[in-house]
Amino acid sequence: MASNKAKAPEITGPLEEQAPAEAEAGAGDESSSESETDAPATAYTESGPSQTSKKKKKKRSKVARVISALKGDAVPQAVVDQVVAKVKDEHGENSPAADEETVRQLLKQLKLKDVAEGKVGLGGKNKKDAGDHRFWGTQPVPHYGDSAPDEDGYIEPSKPSEEVRQDPYPLPRDFEWSILDITEPGQIKEVYELLSANYVEDDQAAFRFQYTAEFLEWALKPPGWHREWHIGVRVSSNKKLVAFISGVPIHLRVRKNDLRAVEINYLCVHKKLRSKRLAPVLIKEVTRQCHLKGVFQAIYTAGIVIPTPISTSRYYHRTLNVAKLVDVKFTYVPRNMTIARMIRQFKVPSTPVLSRAGLREMEERDVSAVTDLYRRYMERFDMVPLLEEEDVRHQFLSGRGTGEKEASTGRRPGQVVWTYVVENPETHAITDFFSYYTLPSTVVSHPRYNLLEAAYLYYYASDTAFVENADELGLLKRRLTELIGDAIILADQAKFDVFNALTLMDNSLFLQELKVAWATEFYLYNWRSKPLAGLSATEDRSAGRGVGVVML
Image (cartoon, rainbow, N blue to C red; front, top):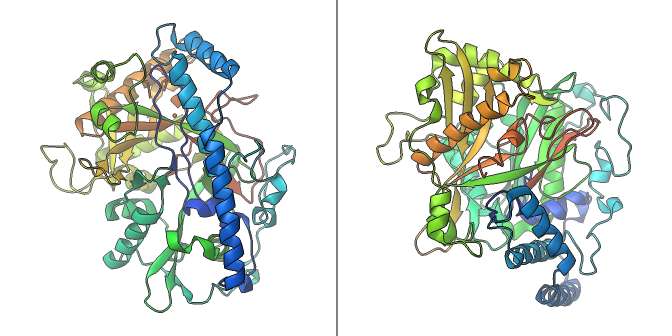
């Protein structure tokens, strides 16, 4: 039950941006090696001298072949022509992205990235066949080749706690388990220091997620959280925290089934210990702890494809601070475009569109109305979290920071989430709400900037969805474009550099309009279900409307 959300560059949108390929793998490279090999605990040993020598020679040979492959690899002209034609068809003849050389370079970068990450072998074959996922082959998850089930349901039945393994799984020598107490400032500091240094990094080691104590407090302590689901591994000799995995309770509806599940996240192993095969043991141990609490289903995401995603979504970026994003190489200036023109093209209005319609920050008095609106709106999607008022209060208000807003940024100290409502001036009914959260990244080794400020679209709802023929008449699309457009304006005023959103819920209605690409896979553990509409539509749902879960 690992969580590792991935973002890979895509060629989309009116002004195509190449995002940093943030391999958002909870355990970095482990997600494609350790977590797929369920080695017995007794196998965790150091290699002897002769084995090490052979491995080094083999590794050098492989590196040489990879380098050789990366130096060649021309992109076929037919592929370039096809992409250019598609861009022109979707975005017009004068689209900056409809440039042959720009497309060629992006396609080449995508191809090289796949080779470098092992997603495509040197001969063009996938690195792993379906049968090579030995760890996941032992887990209750759908497997490659399985046909879609006629009915949703569990793979393995639940069992009483006394039948669950009572002892922790064995760790390699010199390591020990540690249940983290994140209410203790010193221990939550250990977690964010481990994550900030080891969790998510792009291929060029230029960006790395920077978690704060306030963010982890908000993300890891929702109503009903369990201390036992925050699991660490320490070095026995000095007690240094070197690995972590977390679970938080989530009441999930998958189509017509209500599941008391766990959201697994932040699987992270110290970079220097990736050869110790800690990831599979972390996954099994958090699974054991969840079983002891009577929870047998889980939701998680991954950047690599493992058995077997229930849905796929793509991230879109809406550039805000053009000059900075170009300077740190998060994005680039397309051919036949100048940075001055980019700045003009991405300039946002100074005032939110809905400011006269009653747009304001959410307050405690709005909790009941927002809960009701959220519930009704989310009924339209196949997989969603079921939130009570205490959940809404936590998700949308508890992370708003303390004190007054700072004049320079418009943010409160410690703020991690922003939530706004639209209150009808006449009836005082809450007609809409939206939220976004912040997750910055460290900019590694840059002479000027050390932090990339990113805002992520969270949950939203609008009662326009309940108007008859709202989709067919374009009413919902128009309202959401205004609503999320205002979120972008407010994020710009709060000095964010980029605004990100996934292709889930109703996001596909407005992402292209807002010029706001990565992919991430959604997985369910111990639950079998037909695919849900994410990046692509299904027979009964349009794109995005199968998934209504935003994972942090």
